[in-house]
Amino acid sequence: MLPEFLRYDFMQNAFLATTVIALMGSLVGYFVVLRRQAFGSHALSNIGFAGAAGASLIGAEPMVGLLVFVLGAALLMAWSGRNVGERDVSVGMILMFSLGLGALFINLYSANANAAIGILFGSVFGIDASQIRWITITSLVVLAGLIALFRPLRFSSLNPDAARAKGIPVSLIDTLFLLLLGAASAIAVPVIGALLSFAIFIGPASAAQAWSGRVGIGLALTALLALGEALGGLVISYYANLPASSCIAALSFGLYALSRLTRYGLPISSLSRSSG
Image (cartoon, rainbow, N blue to C red; front, side):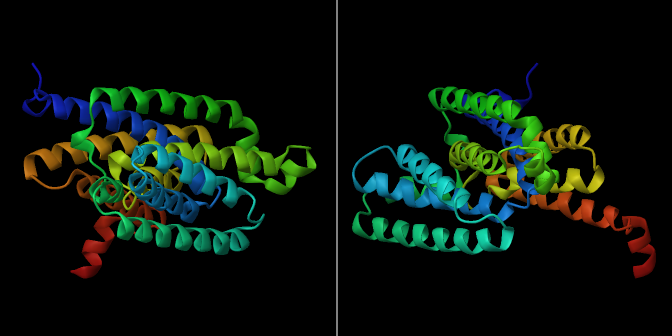
């Protein structure tokens, strides 16, 4: 017999969409953390806001504008520099310009602004069957791309200089991965929201990498943590009548905080003894 919260169509749709997003987004997010591209991931999610607002301005589907802006920004980021510091400055400037455009688009035409603003916070309980199909198909494409790139991506993420010496096209791998990240962000944003996408892309991967240095174990642990926090957040949201994105983000932060404490040898028991 189904639990009470799964007797409703909107909860079933939310669980299906969140399961797909959690599995796909966390696996992509593992490499985001491994490659130290967390800021770029967050920026791509927020850049989608400008695309959604621009599409609303011309009467187009907000999701189309979101996808175009995110993939375009991913290409710009890939070409913006080789080292992390140089790229972060470029990413920050691209993000600033995109958010400025988003504010301008909404100011020029506010009739459909709610559709664009919804991108910022997500609407997991508003997902319908057609959106789930689109999310599932795109997620499968992203995962297929990740599998195809897995070996050179892992090598270039762990040791880019050695990868270049072996003849691996590191710049091409960077570009292809950022495009996969852009596509992943585009489908995750309507569910979890641009502002809280870190909850799926960064939180579980950060915790998993704190607990295991092996890529295979880390990927499996990342997926399990993301699935647990995402579905757990939906259940808490249902019973506590709180925003789902906030609940998922809170669980993600809790896992991250726990991983930092245990990683640095400060288990909860020792903290309680020292405070007493």
